[in-house]
Image (cartoon, rainbow, N blue to C red; front, side, top):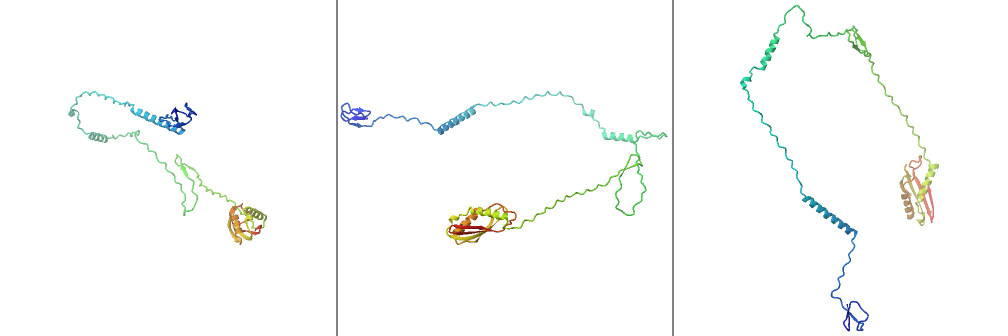
Length: 301
């Protein structure tokens, strides 16, 4: 609030001149300033999701309380009423002395068996009836043929078996030949003739080509421009069947330490190369390095 210094007139906003013509004013803070209402802030996505989750949680709690409050009707199955059986009519039981029999059963059976055994068969001249007799069939006796007995046991082939037919005295000869043992034929596999390996020749065309390619692969890792001064050194190594470089070492080191370091780095950079020719059998391969003020010479043999 602004108050004129001359007439003490009050103005909410500052004016250039008062009604009295004065242009000087004093600023006084309003004792009851209007309370500014804060603008509603927009809710973020996280706040919205949290509000939804809380609402869902409260809804679940309300539903669970309602479920617990609902009364559950318990169905009680009534057992079926037992049917009362009608009482049996009383019957008169007879006196046991009238129906009791003291005669033992065993004695009756024994007397019956004795009567059966004492039956007599009358002696008459008529032949007895053979209806109830058991028919006994005569045994068929085999006829033994007179054959000379061997004086000593001789390994002779077994005689054929004979089987008796229903008629006595007749025979049927059945020959059962002994089983023939079949020998398993073993197929002999032909022996593999190993061809002798060609003798190693370090100057053969295959070895010269292999050494040249190996020298080019090693030279690609040789930093000749980083070697100052001059010097010479020799290395030796071998190659296995897979092309791996083995037994790598210096056969003669140089006084120039930088040359030794560069050659060592070259050997470690090429640990494996192509498999060697079949005639090669692990022979030592040697390389010689000569450096003179930027010019170099590398030989392999």
